[in-house]
Image (cartoon, rainbow, N blue to C red; front, side, top):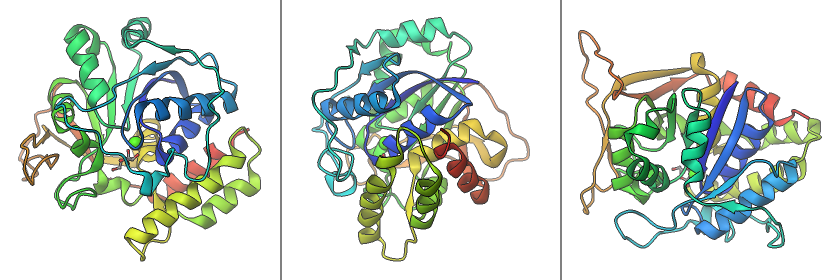
Length: 314
Ligand code: BDR
Ligand code: CA
């Protein structure tokens, strides 16, 4: 069982990742940090509260995360991909009551699960970087592993020719996370672009699924897929970047990594947010606590099978 503290910005693929995590018997979600990213932080928080309400999981704390990047830049949102309110055509009710706790809850959670906690960050890295800056190594080194969706290594980005949205959204924070946190597993566009779920797979899920999220999956997926199809008409579905990141945590044998120290360009020019690592062949690999694990390949069939299994869990 993996105790997971999830940092996210829902957002459609984030929402599907939350559903996947809550339904997955291998995962115990111990807290959700909601931050700006795909939508403003307040909207992300409302969306998390809605999903937890549907699941009947009032017990999971929502922690108020960052509202804008460390650099002081104005946050950029993505309604064209995720919808005005982050859930495509769905509006999460404003009336949902879910206590939102302060940032220092993160340290209480780390302390409580010291040595047995995984952090998954599928949004801009700002909140995780702030946790490091506030708590320091003392806290974050008690975390077993960090799984982080972001970057595009030697492949095109999705918000600039070289940068992926999470790393570009707060390059300073992403660079700090990759350099300072231990045992970081990065799931970049290199793999997540291929974690494609098709309308046929969703059809299969909705036909068999009788859980808290059944009504929500198809409308939000359809919205997201239509948005991706506008960007690339050759796509047969849409990439579930954030779901893949949690899949990678639960299915380590299905994902191949290269071990390299990675960094992110913090230059305020065309390279901002570019993810960089030295991929040249090595005669031997020296892996230290600071070496990052960069996902480069995975078993697609297993991903699809697992996604269907988990999303149809009652
Ligand atoms: C990442 O950016 C966000 O838009 C998605 O939710 C995902 O985390 C993909 O680049
Ligand atoms: Ca996200």
